[in-house]
Amino acid sequence: MIGWATMRQLRSKSQLCSDQRIMPTCIDDYSLFNEEKGSFQPGWILNQTSIEEAEDYSSSILKAFQYKSSKELDTYAYVGDYGTYSGDGYVYEFRGRLSDIK
Image (cartoon, rainbow, N blue to C red; front, top):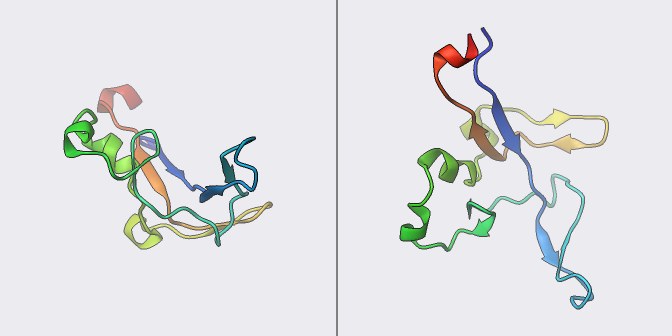
């Protein structure tokens, strides 16, 4: 048995575009140098949401929007065909009943 899946996401930092009338926010391609390392609320809203609003979500959902280092995740960087990806990121662990994966 392999077990439940885990998804790790890396994100690029967003910045203001030079002509904000056309497009207010620009996002560069991912690289180790522009990796987003902030924590968020669901919907990728900056982590300034009140506690009352955050209570609308389960703890597993809230954890998925919290940035974790490779040391915390016990992961390593990955060198791929198109770039090098850190072992850091945002992680969601898919869970359910054991009978569902048998």
